[in-house]
Image (cartoon, rainbow, N blue to C red; front, side, top):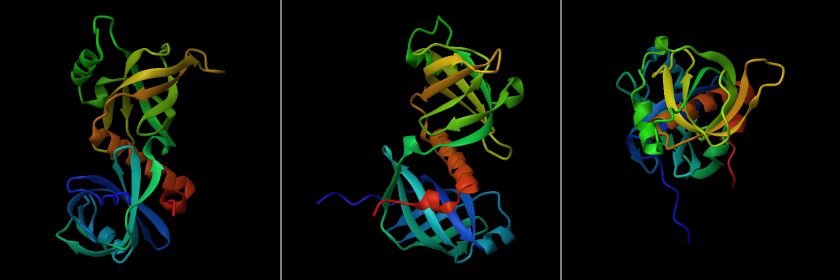
Length: 240
């Protein structure tokens, strides 16, 4: 008999899809308490009226474990302190989609910089990337649609790079996101001039050893975009 799938672990960042008045509300939350049929999560930046809307709302919890996206369903059953929700779980975890396949087109600011020749290893490239500043005002971005997943992306850029090269990809996230941008080391999977756009390139990249907090943030953006465009059913379908 196979091992049961895990419920979300404490300190894990999860995405909540709650149905309020027939409309999906997509939130990012951090798990504070995890029991077999109960989660306590913290949701920041929302007012009292927002939490009142979610009372008794059917809720789907999406989270990652290894290379899988897992799904468990429940209902908002209470509020503890101003920013904490209790979710009573009504199903066992099930496998959703492999997380590298969960993707959406999102308008982001993009900046690409090739790893300098003197940076001779992937480890040194991570150290170089760690020195980048965290203020988006210090960078110039190309605003462009990004075909984004937690494992890679495809987008237009002002720099043409070859397959196999390493690059720093900086993404300026939509307004209201914290942090406002992320720096990611990436390997070029495909690079070619963009058709019909002189001076631009089309790049496809694979993200390398992305921190889980950054990956969770990008997955949340993808879930939000898919909820808006495709509706909640596409996000919460799992194999029986």
